Length: 292
Image (cartoon, rainbow, N blue to C red; front, side):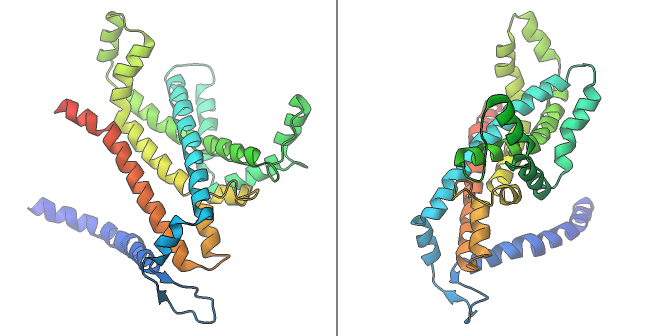
């Protein structure tokens, strides 16, 4: 009993901070989502409109387009980061010349703020001064302009996200691989299992918890991407890179439509929770049932 009381006392500061900076803002956003509110209008008071904002969102083509673009971005970016991160993690498990230097360089993008990453990639992809368009044109004869080409803008953002966040996936999977016991792998090799069978039946099931945690982190980050995209393309050209985070930003700040922007935020949070729950059920629940 005494240890439980001490535990709650130690947790109290964190719980208080979480309540004031997490729970209360969330409840306020939910409250605002049921109102029409422009605090900078001639009549800045909130006008309760029930579920009108939620009804409107179903028929909002701009929102639906942003949702589709965001889903495509999440699929391409997160899957690529998982594959590349796993391959790099396996490479770092072996010794090779310059390993420590390469590992340090590989981790450097993680210490950069997202807005800085967007600024750097903006400089690298500007046609007149950027190194990427210059060498694409010089070596392959490809003209690249993310300001006018929607596919180029989208793929540049995907590559930028992979460059920025693959080191996080690599580090988490290295930690998972290092902690694996060697006995199952040695036994599988004795039984004549090939590398594919060892990965599918031994490695993958054993690193699934770390893999799911990594997917959750990257999924939530990718769904709310704003900084890099805003700095690189501003959501353009047109609406080709107007992700959900950028769409919310434009609704709340340029349009000062706080009620509808809050509604979109609540919907995005709900979709994130649903997707994470589905991933948990599909990846971890069967594993627990097999143990049971």
